[in-house]
Length: 395
Image (tube, rainbow, N blue to C red):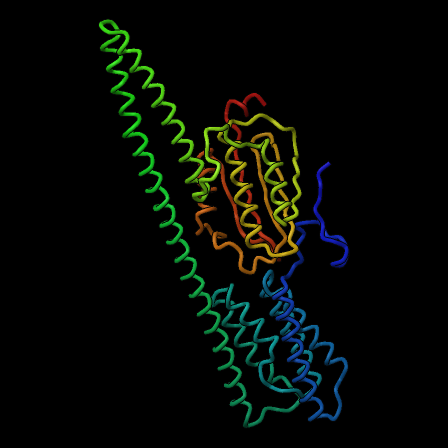
C-alpha cells in the first residue's frame, strides 16, 4: 500500500501531503487587510452620513474583501465579484465615492495577467461604479470621476511596471542559466581533455610499442601491456571521479572506484535525511525492475540533490516525501517537501548548478525534469526517465 505523509494533528487535523489550499497565505493576508480597510472606511462614512452603521453593508464589505482569495486563479471572476458587491453597497447606502481597497487589489490582479482588452474596460467600470450612490449628479461629480480614473490609471501603471520587471527578471535568470551551463560544460571539457589527451594517448602509444615488440622482444611487450593495464585503470578511476565529483557540486569526499550508487541506496540517503532533521517518507509504486546503471545513478543523484535543497530551504518543521514509480514505459522519481520556500532555491527556474546538473543527467537518458514551487507551499522536483527501447519492447 502506498504511504501518505500528513501534517500533525496539532496543526488542525490531518491533511494529505501535497494537497494545497486554493489560495496562499499571502493571498489571505491581502484579502483580510483589504476587507479591514474597507470596513473601517464604510463604518466612518456611514456613521457620518446616517448616524448608524448598517450590518448588512458590513457583511457585503467583508465578503467583497474575501473574494480576493480567488484573485490568482480567477482574477477576472474575483474582480466581477468585488464589482457586484461594491455596486450593491453603493446603491443601498451613501458611502464614499472613491475606489476602495478591494477594488484596487482586484483591478491590479487583472492588469497583471490580462491584456488591455480586459483591463481598460475594468478601469472604466471601476471609475464610474463609486458614483452610483443615492445623491444625484452634481457639479463635483466630474472631479470625482476624474479622481477615480486617475487612481485606476495609477493601478494600471503599477501592474504594467511589475509585469515589465518580472519579464526582465525572467530574462536575467535565463541568461544566468545559460552561462552556468556553458561554464560547467567548459569545466567538464577541460577535465575530459586532461584524461583523454594524457592517458588515452599514452595507452595508444604503449599498445603500438607492445605490438611492435611482440615477436622480437616479448619481455618488453609484456612490460608495455602491464603499463597499459595500469594506465587504463587510472583513466577509469579519474573518469569516475570526474562524473562523481564535478556532477555533485565538487564534493570530493569519499570519491573512489567503488560501484556507483543506485536505487538500492535510496533507503540510505532517506535515512540520512531523517537524521539530518528533515523527516522523509520513501514510497515505491509499481513493480520494481532492474534499470541500467547510468539510469539508477541519475535517480540517486536527483533524490540526493532534491533532499539537500529541501534541508537548506524548507525551514524547520518541514517534511519531505520521495516517491519512485515504475510505469509501463517510464520510471518517475518525485521529491517534494511542505516547507514555506519563501527563500527557496533560486534554481526553481533552472538558474542553479544543482538543478542544471540534474537536468543534464536526465536529458542524457531522454527524460525530462520539472522543478519548482508547489501551489501554496512546498517545493517539488520530478524526473521522468523513459525505459530503454529493448526493455519497453519486452513489456
